[in-house]
Length: 591
Image (tube, rainbow, N blue to C red; front, side, top):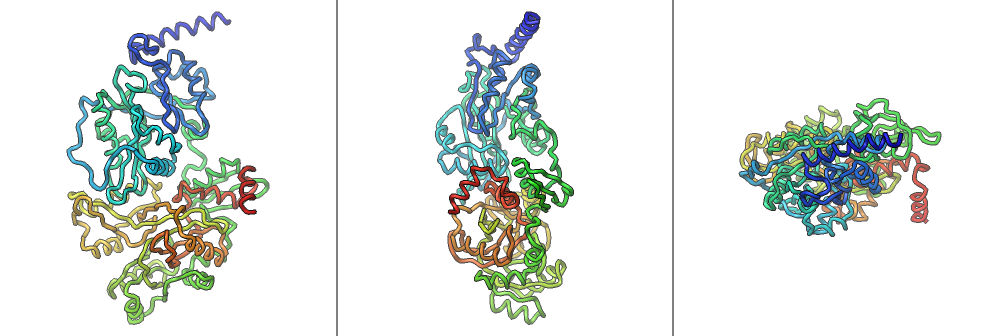
């Protein structure tokens, strides 16, 4: 038996070696100087060049050496089925396809995109911004020190897209130079970790990052650039094919770990849940909490642990009373209660006849109109300065709710604070939808393109409506739907910053003024609601000036990643599910 097994393996190894020599060169490097068993640490995991390994056993052992919370990839594996046969319970065939850009046929773009620039990662702040984008996109983050220590390395190249005006990092891509990694005789290179922030206001960031990386490798003398993309990522595949990438038969292997679970177990049980429910369900399952999804479309599920079962609709649970929910539903009642608790609120009246409405407008100069009951920004109009605008906004709001409120308009920015168990877990500036001109495309088409990007980034939750309020905002700025903005010119197309109407969100948790934190907690306690999103209008998150706008009984926790909103929500529901070390740390901090 032993001799027979050994004999059956040896011919295979000889055949595997010949195949590798024919297609990829000698794996041992004896004929062409290529390094054997080549591995490159990319921070998020290791890139294992499978065609440089002489034995399938060695390749499997390299994958077994994967570090905790890392995501290694064995790429260019000539005979993946052989490695799979050696460890079928440990590794799997990655369901991705490989594309190659041949630099002999690649053509540089005729025109550079406006509004942002592409450069190398150079600072620790860049590294932290890249990690925020990774976390936002559900990717494995990298220790900032790794980026910092490798910023001058030639094997790895990390590029970032920077907003030309604000300096904010909007996207990133990583590249690997194969000649430096393992003396590749084919002079290849590869692209990894292309990610663009969901908040990015510009089109073409991903394309520009791919092009710049390709052009850098081309300038170094590389012959081609490869990349791996999930087989069902149609949007990315369309971009790569547009740039001239062609599919090649290259295979990759990965380890079966928690990070890769969705790739080897098939569709998750929470398939169909929106991002706001899925983030909670995923956190519950990580802790071993039972999950029963009984209406995915509505975001309804039940969590069970230690004899307790709690029904939830996204972040709204049985812990929120019907009274608290009714208070949030009626903005008039909410305003009165939080005012009594010492929270600053804007002047407010119920819409009456035209004369009364006009008198309130004359007193305050600029007003906001909103339905007394409603959510997701429906029927809300802000920055109204004329009687005609006010009358039209009141009429639109009455289509949502018969009772309409008119409020003093507080000039500033929209701050959303997530309060869980009467502690602020996350704070973020919510900014209205905006577009950026390119000198060619009409406003209406720019809105449609930006709306598609927002929908893709949020699972369909965020879109810019092409409605009367959008047209009013554009007209107030002196433009129409058919206008063409100059290249790089920005135009805000909604006055309100609600995410469901195309707004974006920027995390400011670490820099929020204590007075704003206190106001959010006071408001939550006044309503007696354990989980809420408190909306304030502020001059700056770093300043104390604010007015309370409203409280949301079902805030979208997924909008605030990487802040631990889902973790704190599950902590509230099931305190005993908190790991013992974390419970001890909480106890020490409380005492």
